[in-house]
Length: 265
Image (tube, rainbow, N blue to C red; front, side, top):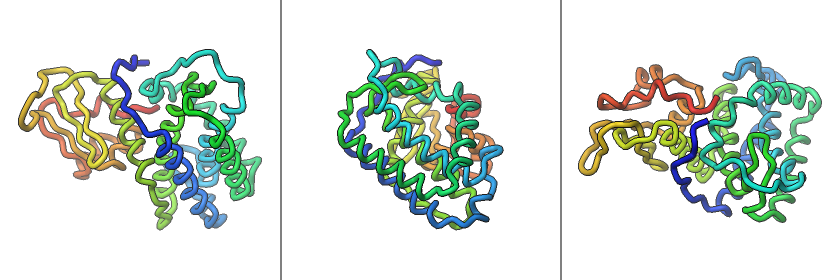
């Protein structure tokens, strides 16, 4: 796991809590209207149907409540910028638990209702510096909620890709936090100042070893939109395909990020 030497940016804890609840509400509203035929559709996650993906969203969000209801650990083990690199080890376990959850909860609306009510209740009582015994490593509630924006935004995009015309909206704060965390993770993975990665309107980071840019137009520039960046960072699309489709512009000899992506396993 790369060490999180880069100082994590500050996130407004009130806005992040609101964003998590808002994005979960958007997904819940969309899932409520899905037909059995739509729930049976495949997704771009190998072996997962829409039903299983929808159930997984409740598991990802419900982990906040599960962790808050456990004993508080003695100390934090995981910095926010370490989290993206700690997720791959749990992929198989997550897939198995998701399938079990979907099979045990045929009424998805009831599952979403229970998850949302439990989350709202627990968040009302918990301070942001409360430590959580998360399976990826203990971390503060405030930091863990930022990671939930990644789960929610990424899987909102997965659901939209799987169901034609679904068009679940993205909460602006959730999309911004997700974009920024994954951009900062790139700067952790490839520290340096030779390449500027622009993801307007949410993030600009410098990365990749080499001559540091100081003024004027940087010699190596990558620019893309938030959703394309998120797809690249999570392996939903390859660097080569995104460049070929003109979804990414890259100029300069150090602007090829293909060997650095994806960031999440």
